[in-house]
Structures are given as C-alpha cells and as structure tokens.
Length: 269
Image (cartoon, rainbow, N blue to C red):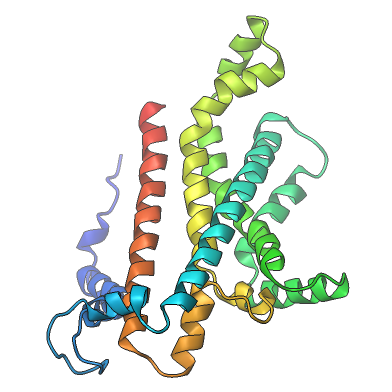
C-alpha cells in the first residue's frame, strides 16, 4: 500500500504557511502591542503603559463602552442559549428520527446561513423586520442573532451525536425507559460536550458580529462591535486598540473552550 504524501515535503510549503500566518496574525499582534503604548499616537511608540486600559474602564467614553458591552453580553448569552436549544432539537430530529420527506431540504436550510453572504442576510433581515412592522432595537438584534447562530451551534452538536451509536437509547428502552427518558437520561449527558461546544461557538459568533447587528440595531442601541466602529469613524484612538485587544482575548478564550469541550467529548467516547 502506497504511503500518503507528506504535505510538509512539498516545495514552498513552509514559505506559504509562514506568509499566511503573517498576513492573518501580524495585524492582531500589532494592535495588541500598541494597546500598551503610552503615547497618544497609534504609530509612535512612547513606552509601555496601561493608561489606555484604564481609559476604557474609567475614561470619558467608559460609560458608553460599558453599556455597549452589557448589551453585547446580554444578547450573546440569550442568543446562544436559544440557538443551542433549537440546534439540539434539530440535530435530534435529523439524526435520530430516521428518514423522512424533506430531510435533505431541512439539512440545507439549517446550514444555509453559513453559505449566504452576511451582507445579504443583513439586508434581507432588515427588510423583513420593516415589512412586518417590527421596530428595530434590542429585540431585533436578538432575533437576528438567534437565527444566524443556529447553524454554528448545530455543527458541533450534530458531530457529537453522529459519534454516539443509538444502541444506548435502545438498551434504555429495553429496560422500560420511555423515549423521553432515554433521551434525557442517556443521550443528553453523552451529547453534553457537543452542546457546550455549540453554545460557546454561538456565543462568540454573536458577541463578535457587526454587519447584521449594524443593520438591525436601530438608533440609540449599540453593541461593542458597533460602538467600536462608531468610535473608529472619528479617528483611531489608542483606547480602541485596548478594547479590541480585550475583545480578541475573550474570543480566543471561548474558541479555545469550545475546542477543548469538543475534544473532551471525543476522549470520553
């Protein structure tokens, strides 16, 4: 049997890899470094300092960013919980209900938001809310976030459920458990790492979203990404770099937790 080719031996592999990593992460590293700059300039280094992190929490614009952060966290937690519940029910129906008419179409509809350009989704969502007379505000942001977070929560949940054989539920039902008891007491605990991973992924997707939020938020309502964008339009200040670095760290934390939750499920299986 022929050995699989080693990708690392292909000519130019390391050079292309380093170039891609540089283009992806160099801007983020520069923003993080200059968030500790003591100077008011965003290009001239004036020494290391935490003054801009202090400005984020206690500066002139602190109240605006704190309210935006509260809005973002409230929306992200609520949207992630709702999306995770819906995604869990969808995964159960798709993977444990057997074959049914329209199963392929249902799978396509669940994953469609992943393929549609976000700007198209944003415009369509705004038009829909306007057509039904739904006043833009916190609720429109929340509804929009729940909808586009569902496929992100669905993917790890469905992947986890696919790795669980249905013999466990069949054994529980053979021991006189109802289908609901088999799901609640057997399948749901086994699925929990995937559910946690789906929740964390949906949370960070909601927390970081800008395009859809900017279209449906309405006047006077800000989330952290839209507040950052509004501040950047008036000129990039060092405190924006500090906020961006904090948001980046939160994103890295939750993506890492989501990854390890998925790995924990694989190891347990």
